[in-house]
Amino acid sequence: MRGARTITTSTVGVLTGALTLTLAAAVPAAADPTASADPLAEFHDQEVVWAPCEEPILAGLECADVQAPLDYANPDGERVTIAISRERAADPERRRGILLTNPGGPGGTGRTLPLADDPERGIYYGLGDERVAEVYDVIGMDPRGSGASTPRMECEVSQAAIVPRPDDADFSRITREAIAAERACQQADGATRPYMTTANTARDMDVIRAALGEERLNYFGVSYGTYLGAVYGSLFPDRLDRSVLDSSVHPDGIWRDVFTRMAPAYTANVERYTPWIAERDDVYGMGSTPEEVVATFEETSRRLRENPRDDVPGLPPGETFGTADFDFAVGYYARFQSEWDVSASVLWYLVHDEPFPPSAGAAAAEEPEYESFNAGLLIAVQCEAEWPDRISGYYRDMREVREEHPFGLGAYQHQPQPCTFASYDPVEPLVDLERDGHPAGLVIAGEFDANTAYDGGPAMAERLDNPLITVADDGGHGFYSMPGMSCVTDAVDAYLVDGAAPEEATCPGLPRPSDAPRNPAETAGVGEALAGVRQAMTDAYALSAVRR
Image (cartoon, rainbow, N blue to C red):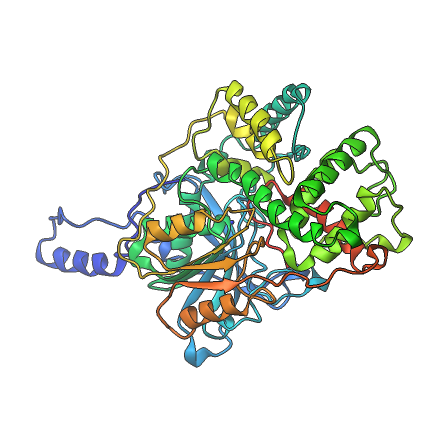
């Protein structure tokens, strides 16, 4: 498709109460100048009332609301409600606490994570059928500002069209769209959005921990969730036990540099995809060398600019498949090496201007009545950091990137963003990430992950002094519990479930197809691949989008 604050969160209510009674009996009119009440006591000590979740997609889970301050510097002020879900440990005798989870984003909601995968119900990524569910109460959370949590970010933001290599003539339009998005979010959520930050979400996590009566929590986060977990451990080192950061963001350059790392990561995937296609020129006819295949892609992109296709299955009425769609599709398909035979067959139709078979259209999935992503929260979290304000610098970068990295997202993440024109300054500095007191965890990174580029994994592992699991020759995103990723899953389970010390490892990615179909027109799965790329264009502006 996975901010900073410093607030004391120690729970001292019982000790303070006992001390107060003793002092009152001994010196009725005196007060202990060293005694300090917990400013968050009413939140830490709140009663959490669990009940069956109301949304059909969450059937089988328990849900509850937890109260927290909107502004932790003013805990007596306005409050937020954090919606959480729970699946109790399947083996109560082996229970070792809670596993708090986050699916990424920023802006992703997470109350479905305690469920088992069930595509028919719209659940494509869940932990309910994994070994962690045996020994942990798995806790899902809609981060503040999203889903069933309140107040929810209400700004209606239309995703800017993904144009991997925009013309100079597009720059003004792109800038106006970013300004309009910022104004819409400020108008809708201006009073609350400055407090929708990673560090405040981490503080919410600690309130959840205390309210559930847990001395420490365990954590599993994907994508943006890796940064959230690192922030939590930095703010509350004595409250974090075991942690897994899957598909880690880079700890530096929050947030613009994290997003702009996507473009070269897509190019790295294209550079391993084109040799595979070239070796099968007798099947695909796109060129016998990587350079010839790229030239074929360029020619197809030019043709679709002049003559976009209106016969591509799955297109909404009135839409066409043009050069931007094709440029994105090449980069997107290049990531998933286990499906290169299918994706190359899709490109074959486009490159050779062949009509798609009538059966190629995949049925559209029915949208669940559940907010899985909140675009307003994405923007709010991005604005927790400073952004460059020189528009000429964005335009310079866009010109450079559209030439060097034309496939995939291209210059999309280099263009002006809503936070370029933020209506407020960050409420506090970003958290300095460190591991000072909590146990070593695991960091996972895919060698060709284009959502969170690989160099973020080693950098995060070094920053936190954690072991790193590298998934070699794989462009996916989110690896624990994924089909075909038993090496990663077994290593995580050994650590989280069995208590083995986390260790460095290199795991193989999904295998590449050894043989291409002799006739691309007869390849199964073309419709699903087309539907997948259209959905990916909708999801691609976040860091998450875990793909099964």
